[in-house]
Image 1: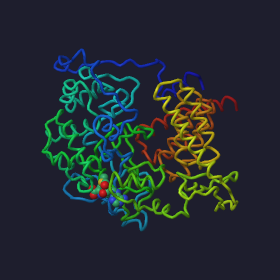
Image 2: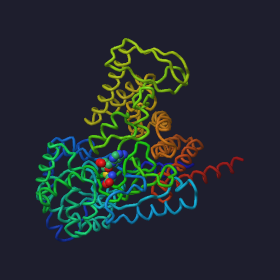
Image 3: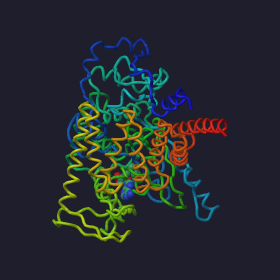
Image 4: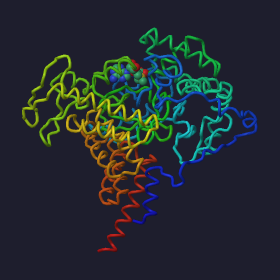
Length: 556
Ligand SMILES: C[S@@+](CC[C@H](N)C(=O)[O-])C[C@H]1O[C@@H](n2cnc3c(N)ncnc32)[C@H](O)[C@@H]1O
C-alpha cells in the first residue's frame, strides 16, 4: 500500500490531521447575534472545566457537593419488567417501544422459542434535550455531537462550537436565549444546568412534550434530605438562566434527571455529553444486559446483543460493567436506589465465585483462573489456595500482595497527575509502565486496575505514534474484555478496531485486516450496519482487501 493511502486510512481511523492544530473559526449567525458580541467575553469565561465531566463532577466543582447529583449514569439503560419492560403510564409517546414489543410478541407466536435475533434495533431516539460536556465543548459539535477536524465557534458566547453553519442554525432555537445568558453571566453554567435549562426551554415552546418528562420515575422519597437541599441550591443557578418552575417541581425535575439522564457516548464509548431520552429512560438495568445503548451523534440506539426470548425483559447497563460487583451494586444503590439482583451480582454474592474485576491471577503459567485477593480484615500472613482450574496449590504473601497493589495504584495516580499537569508525557508513561509491571504478574487480566492502566498506556503510546507498544497493550485488553463480556459487547469490537488500525500503521496488513473483520462482525450487532463507525470500518476493510488482492495478483 502506498504511504499516501496509508496516511489517508490513518487519518480516517484516528481522525488525524496533517495540518497540525486546527484553528477555531468564528461564525456569525445573524445580525442580532453579531451585535451582542462582547469583546471581553473571551477573558471573562472563568470556569475551568474539570478533567472529566460528569453530571456529578460539574456540580461538585461549580456548586455544592452532593453524592446524589452524581447521577450521570455511565451508560444508562432501561428496562422494567419483562414485557418490554416499559412500565409506567401508557399515555406517553412510547409508540416505538410499544410497536417493537408488539413485533416481539407477534414474532414469538411464529417461532416457538426465539423472539428477536441479536443485533436488532429495539429503539432509536433523538434526545429531548442534550448538551456537550464542559470540557468537550471545543471538541464536539453542540448541534450534531460529531467530532470533526474543524469546528466553528459561536461568535457571541464563544463557548459552543458547531461543525457547520447548518448545525448552528438548527441549534439556534435552543441556543439563542442560552447564548445571551452565557454572555450576561460571563461564565458557562455546568452541563447539568445547561441540560436542565434546555428542558425548560423546550417545555416553554411545546408544553405537551413535557408529559414525557413528567412520566419519568422521580424516586423523590428516596433522596436524602441533603441531596434535596442541593437541588434547591441548584435551582438558584437555573433561575439565573431561565424562567423556573415552582420550587417543588424544580426539585422533582432534578430527581428525574438524576435517575434518568444518559451520558452521551462517542464512538469509543467515552462520555462526551448529557442527554435525556424519555423512551430509553424506561428501560431497567441489568449487569448482564440483553441490550446496549450506543450513540450516533446525539441519537441513541438500543440494540440487543443477545437474542431476546418471548416475554423477556429488555435491559441495559446503567454502569461500567468492568468495575467489581460490590462497587457496582453500591453505585446502583446510591444513584438509582435499588439492590441489583441480576445473575452476575448474585453469582459473586458467594465467596466461592471470584470476581475477576478485583482478582489476582493464578500463578500457574497459562492458567486464567481469578483468585480471591487477601481480605485485609482477616490479617493472615499468607493465603494458600488450590486453584479450581489447574488444581495447583498457590501461596501468596499477604503483605507483598497488598504492597504491590498499593504501589501500583500510587504509580498510576502519579502518572495520571503528571498528564493533567501537562508535564512531559514520557515521565507519565514511565510511571504507568512501572505500575503495569507490578500488576501484570499479580492481577487477573480483567482486574479493573490493570485495565485502566493499559487503557491509559494505549492512549499515550498512540498519541506518540509508538504503535508497537500501543499494540501490545491493546491485544491484552481484547483478552481482558473477552473474559468479562459476552461475545457481542461493543467494547470488544472497539478494541479489535484499535488493534486492527495499529497493525495497519505497522504495515502488518493481513493481521490488521483480520482484526478489522472481527471488529466489524461485532459492530454490526452492537452498533448496526448503518452506524457511522460500522460504515467507516467496512470502508477501510474494503479498501484494504482490494489492496491486498491487487498486491497478491502482482506477486502470484
Ligand atoms: C431509568 S428508570 C427505569 C425505568 C423505571 N423502572 C420506570 O418505571 O420508569 C431507573 C429506575 O428504575 C428502577 N430500576 C431500574 N433497574 C432496576 C433493577 N434492575 N431492579 C430494580 N429496580 C430497577 C429504579 O427505581 C431506578 O431508579
